[in-house]
Length: 348
Image (cartoon, rainbow, N blue to C red; front, side):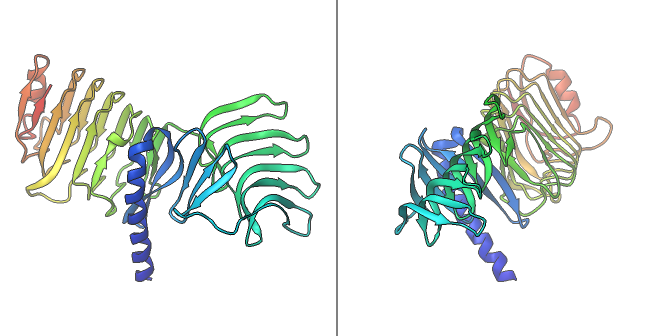
């Protein structure tokens, strides 16, 4: 059992490293979830648009690259697929369902058309085995009109796509994840920990995200984010927090006893908040970031309020960091509020 977990963890890490490189080029067109599993690793899965025609379906088990314009399956797991037979007719079951198109090892493998048991077109697009992948059109088979046209991930609507009603009217056109329209509010709980790049409001419930996942929380990966709310006792093992270049960020609220393991000085623990031009409010509860030795707050011209800890009690936020406030506005109020949190470096 331990060897299986270790092997899976190694596979996750390799997948994560490769995908980090992919994101550097195509982050703005990446319809992906960042998942947390086994309390050890994060991994990605979803659709990446390399161009209007080239798509990658990325998962832990399989990476598929296709060309929509030419209807070609280009690569699977980084390698060209040999032996695909084109323009084949494949009977799928005794009920009469069939596949006409690309076939490998006696199953759908590429572009083609799926017909139901009454000889009606049910789907046209990329398919591997029994699963729609990458791109295709699902039909209302009884009236032969499109129900959904767009991108797919492992049988779910995912990426850009259009849903139609039975009269051909557009029901929804836009971004999809996990078979539904993107929800721009993401809630992380102790049992549910996945996030997508289009999040605008991030909520982390109490005692969440405390597994031994990656040590850095870089919210700069999420350029649309407007508000961050972190509860009490969260992110126990995170050593580095970055909120950099988030043009839409307006509010950050962090509860008590978060981002800490134990009292003690650690030069590797850092909090950076900079180049967030619309940030108005930063609140941090008592005893959060107690062992962080670096706190940098720079170039936040709209910042109106910083609250750290409790005015009446010792709070020990960033108690090993230095304090420097350069601001023509609200300096006294900020200093009073930080009086018992010790030393923070803050420039505006």
